[in-house]
Length: 254
Image 1 (cartoon, one colour):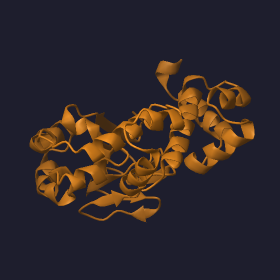
Image 2 (cartoon, one colour):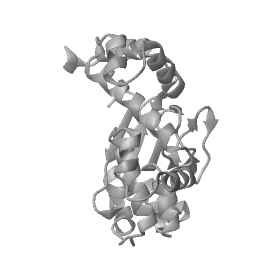
Image 3 (cartoon, rainbow, N blue to C red):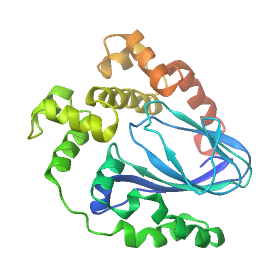
Image 4 (tube, helix red, strand yellow):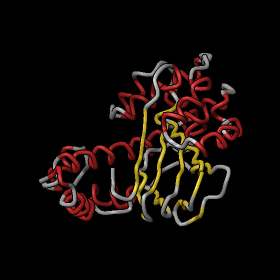
């Protein structure tokens, strides 16, 4: 938790967890900004109070549909802003629309907003969403097979191996991922490989960048730096400096 923003987040369980990666609730204490990392997915943001902007575009009520995140996105907020969101997994929103699940339509969430105005926290939000989150979800084999491939990619299975472990043909899978996810499997694999590099930097900020590139399967250091800058809009070196600067502000780090 930063001194500027309180962010509460929960990863849902049950069938909906195959499509939704997080339900989150944010309240700001003073004006500030945060960055949402690229994950090849999309989501809804519902502003309740204050001013919130996404990549310098001010959000207006009742909701904002985030574009597919192929780059990190900047969120700015005013003092005492309050906003919440639903973050889907890659292709999760498209799958749920195909299945006509109510959470895929933000208009089904809007009746909750008046209640949240008077009781604004994650617990209240989850209580209101519970009937929708627990609805049974029908199985469709075409979606299931594409989900298998996406899960392999997210878990960093090499792409050709991921294709081989999915029980339909490569070309069909590529078409389905492009249709439902908005990007190709190869593009999604790029995003998750550089996310791995970012995670390793968080765990070991002093790691040599050349060694990091080798550990994450890049051809060389330059390749990693280009990918990192393209997807996260910051170089690995600047990101490491930001991590270390933030660490010195936390009492627990001393």
